[in-house]
Length: 509
Image (tube, rainbow, N blue to C red; front, side, top):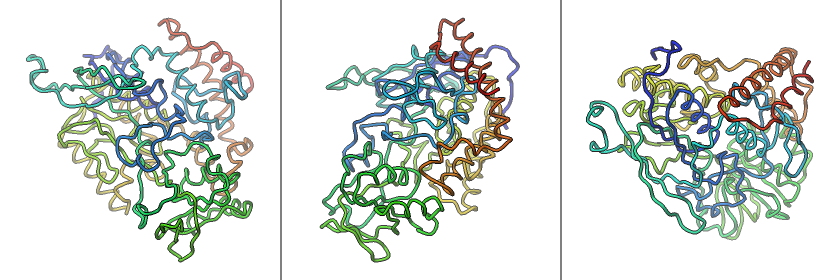
């Protein structure tokens, strides 16, 4: 069990910490680390904060992206919208409220299920509100993170304090220049897990001469106009991109491991509505002449095969001498998906778990890391942490879950993420009404209408409606408090945020 020393006193010690990545997880961790008094440097390879939410029109080579590291970090496509309502997202003291200035062009997106650009703008507002940008070095790619040799550790702390050498390079328009090495007391890895494509092994892939790409490299539907497209994979991204394509493609063929399990009521409606949308079983092999053969013997001649087959964890810069590995999409060993026991607490990961409420869960992880580094909290002994990791592995195996689902919490063990912050760092548990709204939205998507589920606002339960009214009012108070604190620190967020918060509270009453 983690010891609790959170008595309101200043932290016993501060650390010089490097956060790798300025996406949602990295920014959440940075704010918590700075609140705890640590000196934080954030290294971000892109030209702005946002991580995945920073839309990049560039794409990797169609299948070259299967080799780490990818050249383009973001896998965001132009039409992507949230599948959870904005009220269930947001930082605890900086709610994801709609902002004045909706509409097209450079305006904001006030919808409950906004597009990806609205999330990016929200993250930028968050940075402004809490003055985080002065900690961020943009256009800086991390080349290597490795344990510092003994000579880099001061004799006074050599008995147990580990340090890390971080090698980075400035990303130039033409060439990478300015390699730099720095020594840190701790490193937080927050690079996300939706960049490195996971590709299946299908007979004939190497011989197939037509276009193949992973959904990581999909941006717009227009390049697929009048084409026959086979989508390998029928998960969230496969179905969402298929919806994007059916307006321009000649035919779209969704493939699934089990067509029976994939045929939800909502998908049945789509198949009945669009004559050019088809559901197929798994691909058996690809032929050099463009024919795609399915396991039931049926076949189509396709122009494009798109692999919507997910992503793998990849940390090409991280050198731990084999202490931390990625095997079948399991990053390990990690105590509670955060600390590698043998290297804790100087090395930690924020943002590894999948299907958790973000950024709330990242806040909780970041707060725990910050408090452990400062001495407010202590971790169990290494042997105890390793035993907990092993018990987690055995429990998942006993439940028949493949190794690749090691870090998936939502839908498998939701109670673990709900109670995580409360258990480890005194962070409030995730509210039940928010989870109810997320589950309700997913149910509407799967059981009713995949095209319109985001725009139906009359399906909230009475309980959710009451909680939403309370949320709007309390969100205004929390936001105004954040504005006041930020102003005292010399960091004022855009005034439109406070104006919108007050308007939302008024509308909710």
